[in-house]
Amino acid sequence: MENEAKNTVINNLRQIQRRIETTCLQCGRAPEEISLLLATKTVSAEKIKSATELGYRLVGENKLQEIQSKFPDLYRENLQWHMIGHLQTNKVKHVLKYVDVIQSVDRLRLAEKLQQRCEFLDRTVDIFIQVNTSFEESKFGVEPEKAFELIRQVSKLNHLNIKGLMTIGILSSKDERVRECFRHLKDIQKKVIESGLERVDVSQLSMGMSGDLEIAIEEGSTMIRVGTAIFGERPYPDSYYWNEKA
Image (cartoon, rainbow, N blue to C red; front, side, top):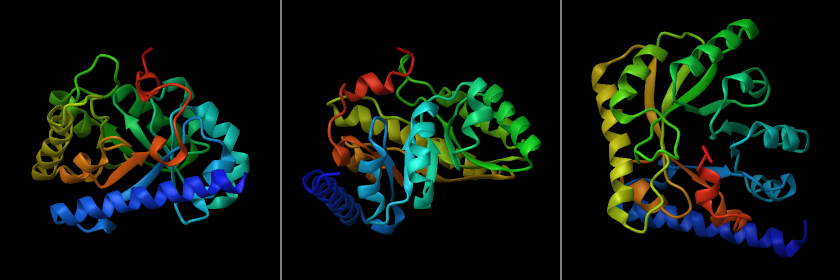
């Protein structure tokens, strides 16, 4: 990778860290509370390495095929791989070969398939429950009013460890509409914690991306997923990549 491109990634990461620190300072949170997950869809393994060399270890991919293509070049980097895109049940067998965390569990059938495969492999997997807090038909995720029941059902599957909740904020120029999405997730987190469900830990809130990470942190995010602001613009706008049903 050319030095200029590598330096751009490094400088972008520094800017993201400054944004995190500034926002935390303004809302009374500690920057250490926020994990930065590298959203690496369409990003080459070489470019990802320029970030991991600085100590960043959380990598999020949307597609199994991309994980498979990059894994051979990155498996020595001691990364924690997160699946952050929609996961089809027929890909479960393959995705579990690579990922440590699945952030996009949004239906019982998928959870049951993961449970069955983990039973066969004699392992467990950490998961997040994805909630569609923007109420957009183009987005996956369980409906907010059905989230608690899904969490209750999934909590009975002993090979799945619920570690948090995930959402994708609405792509809107109106901050209040974006903020509403994140508040929905925070409200669900509070309800789950108050319920005292066994085997459920929703202390992690994965919400916020390049354009809305400040709002997400203000509303309680503990993990932001940043790609464009670190690695540069993708060939298509974010709306194309996150419209998983297109």
